[in-house]
Image (cartoon, rainbow, N blue to C red):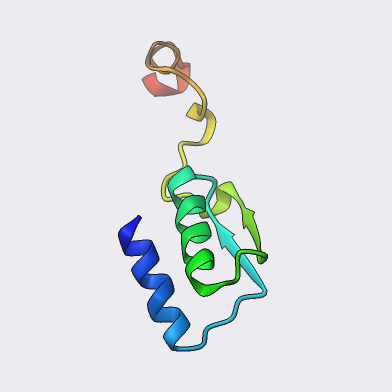
Length: 77
């Protein structure tokens, strides 16, 4: 959290302004965006999240627990 706030402070010094912010759907990414925007005094800016921006993508395994993944026939190929 402190890093995000420091980033926001540095961006403010550089007069950054955002019209729209894109993040992954990960909670930490969304929280980071909110904290930066808050420091910039731009908390009103829309934050759009998309799984396309996630660090990792597990395809058909998304949402499965370990047992379900072990039973996945694609795993045996």
